[in-house]
Length: 155
Image (cartoon, rainbow, N blue to C red; front, side):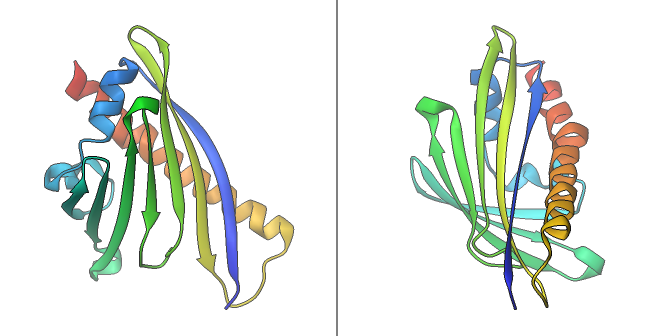
């Protein structure tokens, strides 16, 4: 099966300081499940002060799907990476960085590299459409669920 690289990015504004947004975004824990649109259980294993493995279990179509992710933290840059160790998007990597816009405003810069396996190679227009669908889905999760929770928790 061919592996297709889907590259996309977006920005998500926050009405929270950059340091506050970074702290909230990287405070990974087992209570994170309700933040997501899809039912999620999370386990976190700290590997050191700048690395952890998250094991998320979701339930698409009622069946459990477990995905392990390696997260690397770069606090001096208010950035982190999230690399899928297994699951349907194994090897995919996501880059996040929180940028200050003012004393009480910031935004997230998100860059995704999603690796998907297809039965056949996709044409360039098909790949562009699929990458755009991934961008919309991830941006929507931040806009509708994560950013409001961050702002609510930081008030």
